[in-house]
View 1 (spheres, rainbow, N blue to C red):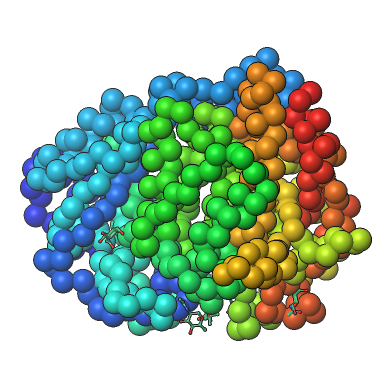
View 2: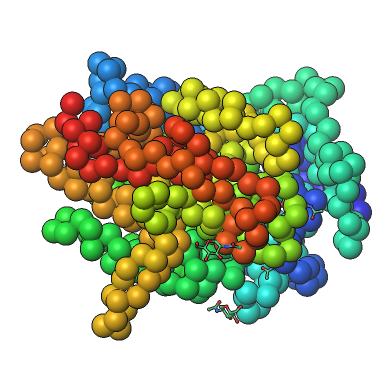
Length: 516
Ligand SMILES: *[C@@H]1O[C@H](CO)[C@@H](O)[C@H](O)[C@H]1NC(C)=O
Ligand SMILES: *[C@@H]1O[C@H](CO)[C@@H](O)[C@H](O)[C@H]1NC(C)=O
Ligand SMILES: *[C@@H]1O[C@H](CO)[C@@H](O)[C@H](O)[C@H]1NC(C)=O
Ligand SMILES: *[C@@H]1O[C@H](CO)[C@@H](O)[C@H](O)[C@H]1NC(C)=O
Ligand SMILES: *[C@@H]1O[C@H](CO)[C@@H](O)[C@H](O)[C@H]1NC(C)=O
Ligand SMILES: *[C@@H]1O[C@H](CO)[C@@H](O)[C@H](O)[C@H]1NC(C)=O
């Protein structure tokens, strides 16, 4: 089946758009485990979130890099809510282009983020299919009751409208996966102009081509809490156990779609004038399940929070090089699976270690390289030094030009917790991330007492003046919790590596580096 169908234009705006669609996002097949149920009924009303392009992401990136890099003149001069908004909000042109589009199509969007860059629209499937050249269907998964409504392809404005959807039940092949976009040829002058104008925004629709369920429960879920056998809300207890007397809030996000939950969290924090200085989350999913544009939009949200002086911390994952959780069917597959949001360059991702003397990286500590985000400038030297340690015949398949993660690690195996009055051991980077967050909160506490600014976005500091404040972890092999140790994976090395990052923090040294 090849789209587009013939549209009945509703107005001149739509008439023009109908011939100038740009492929927004597509995937050849739903991710493994999802089962197609059938076409979504035309009358089903769905809610789509639309992310408008922020007017100056590059400017915010540049500003944040400067503020977060030791030695710069504005080091740690974090921005206010309103200052961040000037970068994060969409431009007037973007807003007006989007307003024209929605009013021409009888849609009533609701602005759902303080920075005005996310909107929500409710519309029937028939209209969503028509306006976005989509093909909304129902999919189910063994871990859920019922179904979710998703499309494998979604096109928006800016170039020739060419969103080809694979035939149902046709296995995906390399070839079928690459023929999906036809570049805009600019045949008609008015189309070219309109395209130029309209590419000032790109809708991102997290729960359309994104397959990221948020299901609480255990490590057998395709995603979910990045720990095996413990509940997500233990995170607050892990943190409270270490950062005693540091005020702590637990933000609970409704069960549903992980991308939506992550976005809801950033939107909530964007709207708080006096936000917490450290935020830690122990959830993630295989990066590919998000899709690049949604992952980028969410990651830019962490950039904006980092610029306000918030340290954003994520667990790296519990599947070693094989995603958030490895499973036995994947062990001989050497294509490594990175985990998002741990791969976002604006979060600090935390891997896990076990044992003492020597302390080693856990086999399950997720780490590797992003396929969406390039190696961050702050880590360029660390990553290239690690890559030089790999043998020429290294069998692992990964993106050597991607953002390397995790950044740091802490203990995550046999982590002592009190449960129902009993001391028991828990495991997972879900324990490691709040542990590291607690250490950062304790250091912030000392900085505030000394009337110094808080640590904020950590990474440029972690990879420079603070890198020697860690116990280097030099043993470990992240083949996964389930996959045997003989499976291809990374090895911990001297210096930064994609299992343990810089290693585990030495509190006194990290505090001294923070006070410098
Ligand atoms: C294991 O992973 C494979 C490939 O990703 C997937 O098809 C399968 O459903 C997974 N099994 C479990 C039990 O999660
Ligand atoms: C998107 O997610 C929201 C909240 O989880 C849900 O209400 C809505 O039905 C979803 N839309 C689609 C297309 O699945
Ligand atoms: C936890 O894993 C078990 C074993 O696979 C499964 O039967 C159970 O449904 C899972 N529980 C939840 C809450 O997902
Ligand atoms: C190996 O894993 C990659 C990444 O998940 C996947 O795209 C590919 O289909 C897998 N290959 C096989 C033969 O299962
Ligand atoms: C590898 O990473 C780079 C930088 O992020 C990206 O441009 C490229 O598309 C990635 N390659 C693959 C095959 O994912
Ligand atoms: C991974 O490490 C843990 C902790 O040492 C161990 O219990 C588990 O058996 C290891 N997994 C494999 C497949 O060897």
